[in-house]
Image (cartoon, helix red, strand yellow):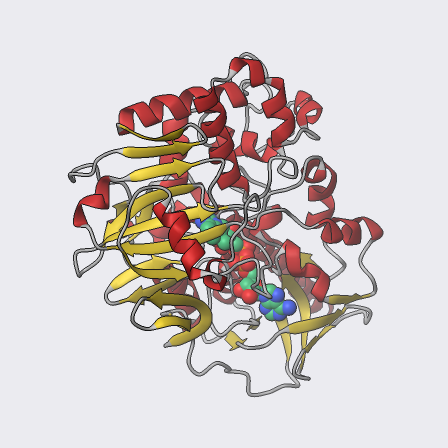
Length: 493
Ligand code: FAD
């Protein structure tokens, strides 16, 4: 089925909106009885919502899943085009990410893991294009350069950041971490500027901006330190964990496993194309939710998984705390552009590259071979020199060709900045915001719980792993509360 999301361009057909997606659910709505009071309503069918829906239905609770889009997966979804899986959002997974790997293993999908890099083809090099010109280097030289640069950047304590953040899944365990909490990427680059060669400065700037999707000024250093700590303070490990291993079947097939398991319990109801606009928890024992198209739903508990950058579009009664509203207004900075290009050259399969500072895309890497023998390359840009790829295809092709000459047959992408249900990509906080707002973002509002990868309490916050963690924890809390209530009422009767 085709989703409204995403777009593709080919030279013979131009731009077409919408892409095929296995995560589009038919029929889009299963709700029959609008008077029913559900145990739980979950807003959002991304990995946080899907995990919570799966766990709560398995535990015996009547659960309603409401989703504004026409598909599951949220910021993670894949599109199969001519037999090849293009990942529009979340892609790479790893056994070092405990929550996501547990699910891959649980669904018997370990045979679906595939490596993105493949250094067995002729064009086996890395293009490095800076203000000093373009040159190619081996992947070994690439790793050596980027490791040096990243280590200098992270080394705030003479111990590669390890004494400041010894436990990535408990980031504030050492209080000295707070002394770095308000530092931006630009501040950190300024601190180490005399210690960096031009190559190292360009390398670390590009890497951190690909991670943050923001600018050097508005991206927090602490978020990078957490990624670095979760990647075991080691560049090759971090690289493999965040860009190395994907699912052959595509992320939407993985997301479907969660949805189908919940559905097979017979306790799941769902409604797609249903945008929640208001959540009213002012009555003592029931939450009422209104949708944009005038529908009303009721439940004892709500798990709201609406992402940070669009949470201001939902009204809450009674009003949220001032601190939470402040956090929501603050938003996060990641406006990354992720773009796929199908290149008519099978030998590009071993290629990778960085262009900084003068290009509108920062990083490119070969990621697969399509059934027609073309190389699939994936590119990333950020808020610096930002590009809305579909608005100017010539400019986009120019940005791709700034890495190396490429004969592009197809472009595929999803504009996350213009997406009304995301307004950005994975979370990356402004300097100071993480330490200031994470606690309040995680706070519940009476019977309404807030869960999302954007404020997950783990080392892989901002990843699929964080979403699964957050959904698991919210479902666990709700399950225990509702079971407690069931026990109490059976004792009384
Ligand atoms: P979401 O996926 O955002 O789910 C929230 C859901 O709520 C959405 O479906 C949304 O439509 C819905 N919603 C919003 N508002 C409403 C409303 N008012 N009413 C009803 N429904 C609503 N992670 C990795 O682990 N590996 C990667 O390689 C990776 N790469 C990424 C690349 C990109 C370009 C992007 C954008 C993300 C990437 N991520 C990656 C991050 C990962 O995709 C997210 O962290 C994760 O998918 C978030 O899941 P979630 O359920 O918490 O939030």
